[in-house]
Amino acid sequence: MIKLKHIVALFLASGIFAGLAYFLDNQEKALQILDKIEVSTGVREQKIVPVENDTIPFETKLQSELKIISSNFSKRSRRNIWTLARGKTIVVYLMQMQKFIQSHGGTVLLMEELNDNPNSYQSAKVDVLTPKGDSLHLTLQVSENVFMKNASLMSIAFQTTSLSPEIIEKLNHLDFPFNLLVPPFGLNEDFYKDLNKINNKEIVLWLAMESTKLNKVHNKLRPLRIHHTAEQIEETISDAKEILPSAAGIATRYGEQAVKHKQLLQAILKPTEKRDMWFMDLSMEERTVVPQTCKDFEIACKIAFPYNPDNSSIEDYVHQKLREATKSGTSVMILPLTEQNLSKIEDIATKAAKQGTSLVDLSTLFNSK
Image (cartoon, rainbow, N blue to C red; front, side, top):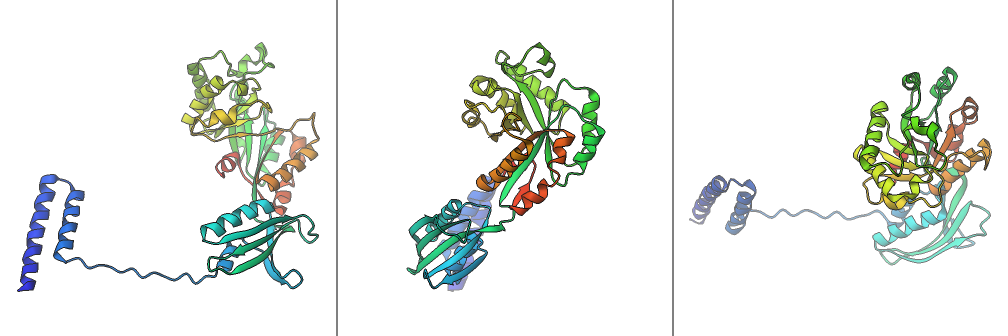
């Protein structure tokens, strides 16, 4: 008899559900009502999901998080010594470690950077209380010569206003992606046709912008000036993108006045954002407001420093940029496109790989953070 009552109840429930679904024309509401009916009639069975026990020791998880190269116990210091790959600074490792420990319910008792460890590039002393209340006494040391793969990124870009067959050939022999900073205006049509002969490139609109260095000769470059309206600036950027449709971003040419003028920057960044491009300030102007202005838009912006012959040699600049990659995690190298400069970076990919730096195009670098 009880079973019969349940069957009748289900029958009525199905009828109610069908009627509600029809009149309300709302599947979600009907399903909610059926859900309540099933619970009230006792038809629904509760599903018990088994909880799996985490059997991996906390110490093992922490080693995996830091990707340690080796681990051994020092009887002298009575500490576990964990060796880490070079590519991040010890401070970055410590921050990563602290975040992981706290997120897993552990406690950092001591973190102290060491300056007198002759066996490593950088090192630190760390005492940890695990989530289970056990103590870990560690010495972290960054290896002198074992580098982390893909630990840092570097982009190489070339400023170009002319292309010779020899330069095109050398570019096509480079074994890494690179960027070409190209003026969209003021060059002959053959130049733009020759761009199609170059492989493995990413194009950047190298746009002239407000500067004290501009004069009537530069009018053919269609520079973006302070007195231009937002509509004029958008038209210029639109025309530039039409000439070089594959362009991934915009970089300043001249422009030390433009990057200090927020209203002009806003007028430039708005159409840049609209076309899903990024923006790079190469002006080397200390009072640039690009970082602050960029925050008003959904766009990636970066400040980079091109090679300046007044400050260093090509060799010193290249060395500086390689070193910058290992210290900060990213680096942008910008050189004038000449046969001589190309010859001086023929082995750059090998040098970068030895220190764990990957060579990528600027879009990849911009999207890495």
